[in-house]
Image 1: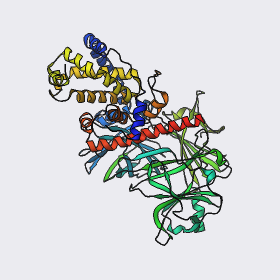
Image 2: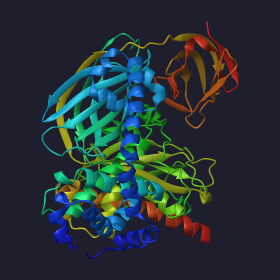
Image 3: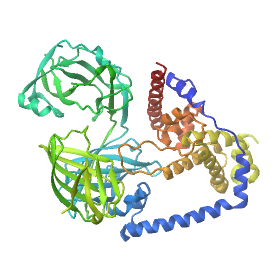
Image 4: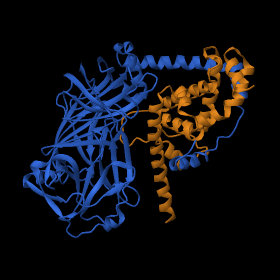
Length: 446
Length: 177
């Protein structure tokens, strides 16, 4: 076999792995002779069965009838298993069967576990993503593949929906309209762009009519829209290729009004090729400087038009020493789109009690007004402008004096309304919560 | 005993044939499992389990077919089972790959970190192609996946590993500077 350069590197590195020889034959014959292998496995099986039965009983009798539910719970942190509600709802289209198997929720958020099984071909893989999907409740969705079983060609996914209102007890409709197979993620990509080498002299720009914008976001986007016209970099003045990223290149880069503009041209055929740039310090830590973006096209005459060929990323680097930072990228190249119309209807009913508190805490750019604690986490509702780099420290103080820190917080904003969701990795007994501490401020429940 | 004879006699044979199979394929399978699991002691368990399963199920082996492919198939599914049992999946954004809980230094830590950025299936494919130099036809038999799909998955896994190794190399370069 002829090796290319990459294979040569891999081969030379894998060859350094030491696998000492040992008496395989002796060990195998020993196990076959004393039969302990069989006896132990039966014992383990009995133990596993008992543990399995305990888990099933704690999650309802219905679970016994759902094999996929059992498979899903084997993939999850056992701490969350008591919160799971077994669901039996399936839909088949285009040779792919979708089954919603389990979920848990509170009033604001729902987490749904579902499987997709390719019954006729081999279109799914560990890199398959849900592309066009929605839940009848909630404003912000994300999904991850959590398992892929090659034998049964079944992929399991977790969907999280946030921003719902009164989800508990409501009949929900989950709709999946397309999947993307074989997406490839490139993270930590060294762009090779040296910020100090980018000229601060005024670059050539063109006017972008915001009516010609096909998408965008970030903190500056609202002000751009209210201006009506903004300046973006003249397209195709540079052609900076990024290692391994064949579906996009930097078509111009420069400073406009002291903001760093990085203009990219997306040339790949993937329906959902996407990504962003970020900056790291000398230790490799993400500096959490997020861009505002604007998507637009350019016609034959060089005028802007409503098409998403270009994305311009605009960074405010004021106060940042650019000598010491590296520009990196996170990019995703999407594969083939598989379309269908898979739909499941089900009702969720959380078992825990929700507690509420009103407060008036000032965090500089935003104010916290309400706080809800459910068995799956804490929801903070506020107003203002949330700074993602200033994640509040949240502790749950229990009545027995113990304290749990919540480490994962997701956030989204909607017309200056801020939703922060702090999710725990195990159920919280809300009846035992004494108070919640946010950046040292204590909020007690009503 | 040569390969062809073993292919023909394993299904009806006994401990002698098992001994011959271990002699022929034991060490290569151990290396294969070690690369997939990134853990030498678990690889020992996996290879032992492979031969015990093969021996107990030898009557289901089709006489005259490739014993090598059959054993690799069993070793692969055994490793995947071990990895599945080690998985502890609950969505936390900072989740890293599966961490080995053994400290034996059979694999350089940086290389292990790079390998653990791949899935077990990807590590298996990389090893089969680059070290074992198996053809896609042989791999079809082991993984029961069409050659074209395997080719795509291999290219993807290869690029992912090269990227991970390059990150590691750039780290070294920074240290040297």
